[in-house]
Image: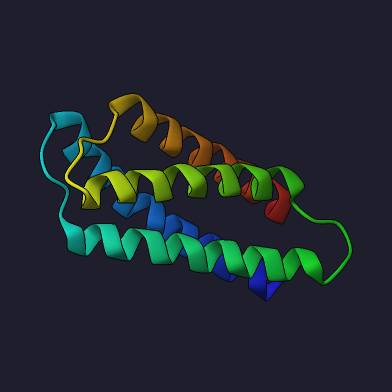
Length: 113
């Protein structure tokens, strides 16, 4: 169970940074790259830990995994747009956050039920 708690911790930190980044996107301002390159790797570490947990067998948080993978795909697309100087669509940024938050809620329910 330690893996799942570590995963929750990394996702929680990534979520805090993500909310900060979302404030920049919604205001149409340039995102701070230090935060961009901290948010993504934290979320990736959380996802990798969750995948390792799921591969160990037994019940696993399938819904969370699916939602986090979808959020990661959207995140990669946004990073690509950001690095190429193109604006990040606000709807995509909000959708990315909603997918991740929903996955996080499902993960919390799975871990603490």
